[in-house]
Length: 372
Image (cartoon, rainbow, N blue to C red; front, side, top):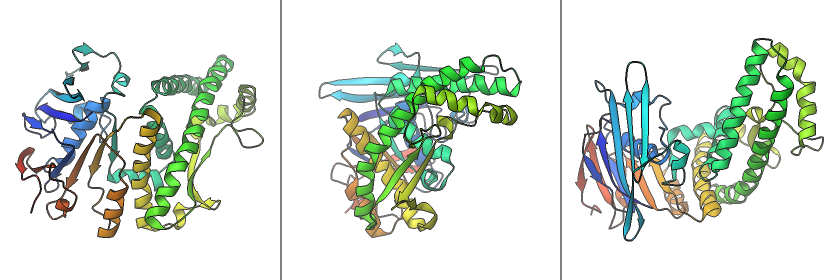
């Protein structure tokens, strides 16, 4: 479902115009700070209704303005195109976001999930390998949320109950804990089961990819749920209620919930031992990139649809041989957007139909499709 065009009004430093994107591959070439990543961010924003660079929508509005809008046309079939329009108004007291798909205002941005699914490759992906456990949980949750709206609902409900339970613990008001425990165990177990199934399927993709590009075998993802049975597997609800009951005194002292999916651990192991601490910087970087490739493959296997790939300077830190290997492993996609610095050999990856734009001061000019 490739994008045909995007129209901009006051989105960061991007000029207020419409850019033509009607190509399977689109490259943005320019120096740092000229707006390449902003263009990728706009595609991501249209796909999910949020940014991958900030949690504050107001930061996306061009300096001196109080609103922005994005509009895109994307190809649904050979003869039909759909549209998405997103606007944000940032008044002194309120922020109002509006998302419209094919003329219908959406009540929840989760309704965008299956519209233009994107897989983003960026420098911050390294956190999935070396960052806090929260970042690894985020990655698995993102893989599921790309196609499973029910998982989004489960996660939201879990977080809502967890917030209420933690508030009760902090305020030392314990009368509702039994009720919260019942609800927490219900939603939490569903999260753990879905995460466990996803990691199992993901390993069938990821381990082979990592061995092909590095020669290192048996690197897998291990999921360790916070709630577990005596055998280490996912427990039943009665077991979870018992765990919560046994840990309640600790929760009271700590004034927060010390067990549950928000405490799950996800590690990369090789032959039973942690892989990341002994891996080189290059091996860690490849691990992060291959996770994204596996994410795209995982999505296609789950939905029989191809995603849009957004690659933000991720090849820059790899040597030429590794770049070639990575690009050869890219799965089938509906569309590919890449950013490059001017000195990079982007012409090696261009096809005769690739659109190449020179990006400067938030504007763009089209270069010849394939440099000679």
